[in-house]
Image 1 (tube, protein in one colour):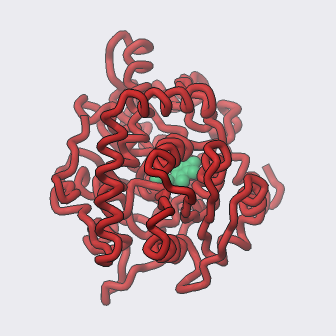
Image 2 (cartoon, rainbow, N blue to C red):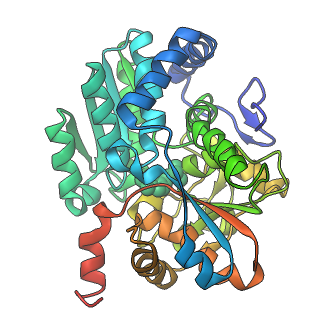
Length: 387
Ligand SMILES: *Cc1c(COP(=O)(O)O)cnc(C)c1O
């Protein structure tokens, strides 16, 4: 099992709670409420019921016979793409919105980049009867018109963040600002394993269902053995930590793949952003740099603090892949297996294709964190209709 953070929310030297004084009591209230809920069998049962009957869990494990043969490896996919709303995000959002309700909150605020977490939050809020406001960078609002419309259909209000670079990191700032002013009746649903304590730990706990299921599924498929390598995409790091949690005690290599233009662990330096200390892309003056990649869902300049910790102790590795490798992997996977992946998970796929010659005969488990429907229009443009 992954270790719990220290009482002040640290994973080694990372994490913590770097927030304005007005938010300290809110974080403390949330931490107490989460500890209480997680220890309560009734809460766990309600969440399990929702995950099963609404989100569609357990997600299946698919062996890729075609690609595996081509690459000389055994390739298994954990199918988070088959969840309701199309990715792993629903796992954490159902837990958080259920917790918000238990805390007596009436309103959800959330940030979103490409719109996937916004859609998941709006979905859970609609289901559980809370109002929902989603902050989204103005540039992303223009780029992701379809997801904006989806959130509105689901009854959420979408507010463009007009400060700074008008992308994800500004949306996080504005959602936090909203929360500071409305904390009495409002719950802030964070989209990844980031932010001040207890968020990285809480979101990891909700996402660990991926790793638990995958561990059992691998044992039954592999005669009690574990895979040699477990690999996932890393934006903030929630789907990766979710699947890692099932294998951290095994001998499996744990690989989190970042985009070359957003390699927080690979190229960043420790710094403080959004309430946490973690690896962060920053310039020589300590200013946060913009992440830049083909996949809007991975365009986050930081990374969850537990990944920084796992990197610092050498338990997990964080290589990166470039956009050209990702575009190629996206097509390879579609053609070889009949599965169109989200662009985010074309990143771990690209890493597997590149590294396969060094992993001959090994069993590789990849977390397929989401489906590619949302990326098809963008790929059509990139490939100019030529496939
Ligand atoms: C949001 C998203 C990611 C990146 O977020 P993590 O917190 O790093 O998991 C990856 N894949 C998909 C499909 C997503 O929607």
